[in-house]
Length: 222
Image 1 (cartoon, one colour):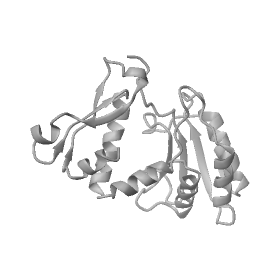
Image 2 (cartoon, one colour):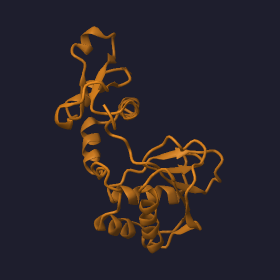
Image 3 (cartoon, helix red, strand yellow):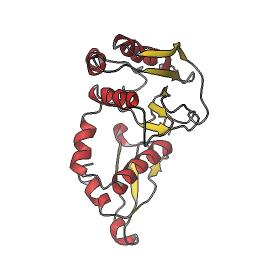
Image 4 (spheres, one colour):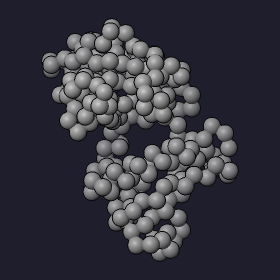
């Protein structure tokens, strides 16, 4: 990854990631790399990447992340440093959970600051979604936050059915409520990645924490 990003930052156009689904990687190896001769055979500023051992959906997400790096002219070394701060997803089918350190960090990061009210919704198709959402809600309540309706809803709001992992939904992601920024920062301190997305149907000061299905890193079947 450290060698790959600087090469990508020199490009102007990022091609979608190619996923090899027919050939299982040896010993479950996963990774991405430049196609041989891509920088020469492709047009000016175009880079083609092959990814092994990932689904097409996850490959598209990787392409989106790299496009974001390009568009915002982010320092590759800083990106790598920040990625190292993020807690990885559980292996195999292990349910997601908050570690003791994550829970303590989350509470400590929010205690003493203005508390907020947030709706929490878990995808009913996510086997570990309800328990994971409850663990997060419990820590938020310990920090003085309120959960809208005093419950975790198990529905799929429009537009979120295909979004995996945790997502914080606000009316305008470019101008989120202060409480949303505090929660994102607190989750980051606990090494939990929490992107913010927009939903114009929400109230200006509202926020919704979506607990989607586990992110898919590798194909379930080959």
